[in-house]
Image (cartoon, rainbow, N blue to C red; front, top):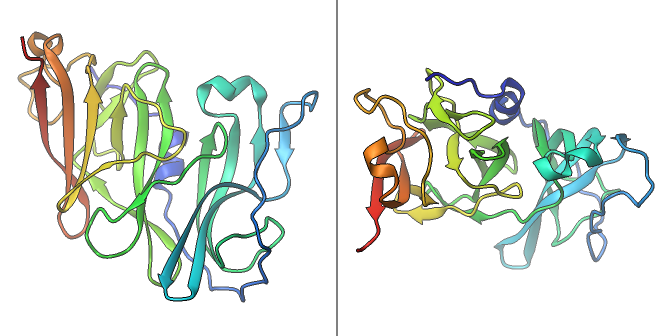
Amino acid sequence: MRLTIPALLLAGLLVSCVAPAADTPAPLPAEAPVMESPAAGTPSPFDIQTPIVFASYSFQPERYVYKTLLLECTSGRYTSAKQNWNQAWSGSFRFRLADGPSVSLTDDGGVTSCELELSFNGPFLLHVDDYNGDGQPDFALTQWGSTSGGDYGRLFTLNPDGTVSGLPVKGDRRSIDFFGGVGDSGEDTGCFLLPNQHFAGSAELTKLEGGFLVRTERPFIRMLDPEEQGVYFMGEPDRWDASALEDIYLWDGSAFVLTEQRLSYRED
């Protein structure tokens, strides 16, 4: 079975991130505003005309120095009818690294980078860790794949110069259809799969030495030909007995590679 990943979804996750030159940071207020959904009675869809913060991460790179990384929607559309599909807010997003522990939507100071076409259902918590061991903050953004099948994920890193760039993912050719079936896309997708799971926008991955792990409880996904070479899900004889599937991605110096898949079973 050969399935096709939604073109717009992968285009948004895989677009190249280019960092423009840094601007002079603007003065920052005491607290960052909270994003709110449109008031009742607001026409839908409507265009997003001012930047909206969807996720932020504040940290202290050195003593007495504070920074905040923002994921902002700079233009796009809100559609209330899509709230149940994690796609209510869609459009152009960017990252901005600003000085201080909090920022205002009216402030444009800082380093902006990585223009992406994405969709989310609302603001979310950005889960940050160092997955490749280089000392820089890494995080995963997730995009809706299908109602039953789960999400796709992509890793990003905050570079020392304040820009954000994608971390390559290799070896995962799996794709999911609208009804949750898993198949072979025919080539590396550049993403990692989060089967049978939905995240608000960022996944908290299990950190391993030199990589990360994605665990799927009670995996149910349909199978390709068990004799075919490659990395997919368990075969039909195993699917009802397995209690979890673990996908292991390890950093090889230039990319995260889907290195191993293993099953765990219920104890009788």
